[in-house]
Length: 382
Image (tube, rainbow, N blue to C red; front, side, top):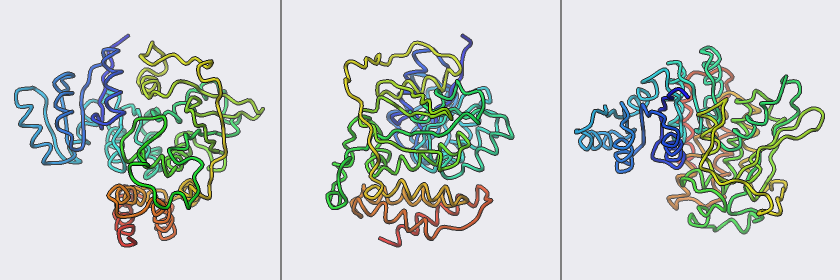
């Protein structure tokens, strides 16, 4: 197998660290690493993988890292510009983007412009700027390979499709998070600690809260629309508590194809990096007899309103999805800070959608302006 070159954006997070595990297993060369503020972890990563470039989105953290790595040959960069420079540093690299939130959009566009293949774990890239990203990828003939377990499952199941006309619908699975089965009354006073207790996955705080509110499934619905070029009405959601069936597709003959595996992100990460080939992975083998029962339930759309808010946003189109995404990022942050209640997340995101700009065509500047507006709007409602 020829040497592959990988740049990992967001390398200190859960997905980033697992991506480096996969890279180490297969002997891939790391060209660039980026993080937000965690200097301790990225310093260790740089010393192990010896990338040509490293960047910290936080300028003070970048200055600290530069001092720490003065004895190495790694060039240390800072700010959004530094992260984007890392994303575009080598056009032969696969850029795995696992940055959390809107911050992932500009590096994705920069990497595509450079001609890099994208392994996308940053769902906000497509939620906020799907039209821009997909148009640019088409223009540059760039593959965008999904890393999210759900979208990877769909991507894998679609490998047997001869024509898009054969596809009837996409079925995203959701774990239901820690509050599955709870009513709105029961969720009024839940704590941040309770919301962070995900039953199946180990993720960062922002994503775990999104799972608790099921906002993550709404974001994934929007992402699926862009990734697989389908209508919102053709994307369904089912709650699958065990997280063994990662998602499914249904063909026009009503045959349903699913991708299964133990809850371990190294499978979709590795497949995005090795596609179209498959290799041995460190992931535990799935033995269905050990699980005995797999369950499937309809989401409670009344209690977990974020899903339908996202569906409405992608149906409206334009900058609505960007507004919803940024409003959620701010509301999620406010909840983690103890400034709002759990149910306020959906309320604030819904209000942002109702007041969001109504445009069809947009630029990156428009998306960034909407991001600022949505965060300010949410803050003003607290």
